Length: 389
Figure 1: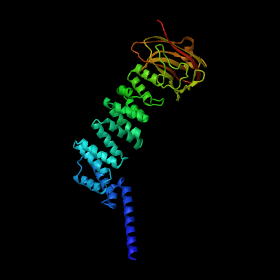
Figure 2: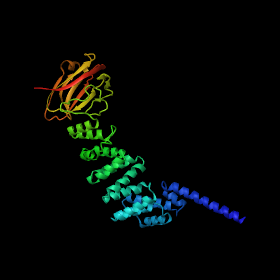
Figure 3: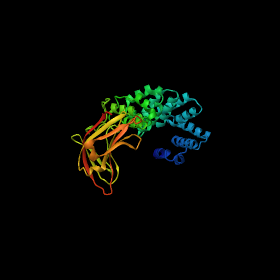
Figure 4: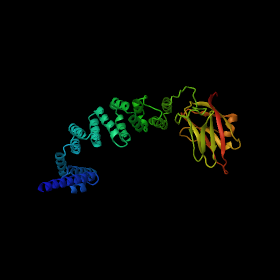
């Protein structure tokens, strides 16, 4: 009888411990105070309380009370495999300038929990602080695989260190191992034209697929900065477009839909109307006639001189008057020349590119009238040629 009672008592105690332990683990992250009340001396509860206090002190820019670190030490004694005490010690070592000891603490934390995002983050930062880019980037690569949306999370971090040429060999090695990190990091850099040299130096063209996001972003950054020739050369390399000195307009027969804008046709589908490629080398246009706007355009890089744009148009001549072709310098509103769609087939559009106009937009737009009329037209036979005089 006594033996049965002892056995039952032990079972009850174990059950209580299991329940309390589960409750502490469940509440520690969300409500450390409640976890501490359930089991005040539980190491998980102690660590959660300590980390909460450290976070609160950092947020309020106050010193962490010594008792908090004592709590961490006590928890570390009870739970020697927990990574959190080593994270806290590592941060303490960083604060007093002992980076070597901080790295040792962070490595100990990572050894205890290889999936600890905090350990890998602090280790990456500490490695970079000591110019150990190789190990730092290894931690970043691990973070990208462990963290939710990891690649998007670490891309800005990688982009920051990519600005230091000393890290480029290690970055190239990491990019070869993971093309997704390469694309995400270069995309982050490409939004600032000041990083253009860095992006082009790091890019591995064996990884640059048609869907790489950084190329069109960098092309647009270069265009915005007025570096048109460089932007067009990058665009041509990505989409394997052969450029010659006589090249004026791209995809004149409306068959090359894969190459991106702005050096290819931007065809609009909006409340203004619709422009789309059609089989047979044509562009089909519908203008609703209810509001002004652009339906198609392309950015050109014409040298100073005289040019003539000719196009064949099919459609009701009376109604195509509301559509017009124009050419203007980039970043300027006044056109170098303009002509109605009804007249361009007969005589073409002649215009002169001045010396201070390094890039030009050729545009098809519509102008609404007092009474809206829908226009349906087909455009083909586009030619843009330099002329003498």
